[in-house]
Length: 110
Length: 118
Image 1 (tube, one colour):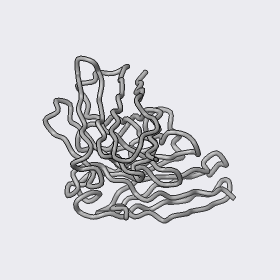
Image 2 (spheres, chains in turn orange, green):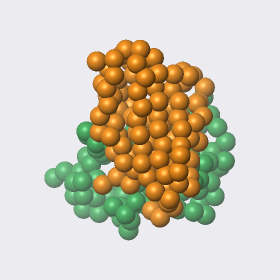
Image 3 (cartoon, chains in turn yellow, purple):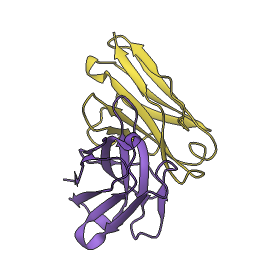
């Protein structure tokens, strides 16, 4: 059972904006930074967002992150077919003593 | 360019041991904490163990506590995972990952496959 809760699936059409949520608690999201990763089948997870809302160089500005209280969200605007992947949130958890992942959201571009 | 290269994976019988290594390059190794993360087929990533830059802080997931040991050698830019008393449920792709302590990971290796089966 994941400490961070994500919807198992999300979908959208090309050009649309979608949002993926990540719900936690005061021991993780409430007091720590949230990171987001995406993973294509057979590949290594890739960092999309770090420290709640910062993008590493090379990540398009179509991807944005936000955090409020014990929840966070990843928004993807101008949805493209290549965005179809699994998306994971992560945050350090003070109770468990290490970083914890959400269960993942499988994004389908219709 | 940051590179993390895992080695030491393979097929091992239940109850036996295996040691994974991760060689780092392209950054100042002792500026960062290092972690091992695993992913079983069809499942999401799971943090396994982490170690701070000077080995002063170490943490383990409950599922491996008492069986796995993480260590690092800053002179060799390497981090290790000693895995003892392996179980079939430890079967996974094991990634080496970089992260400042108290933060998740910003860089990942390509992974080393560990299969525990008789």
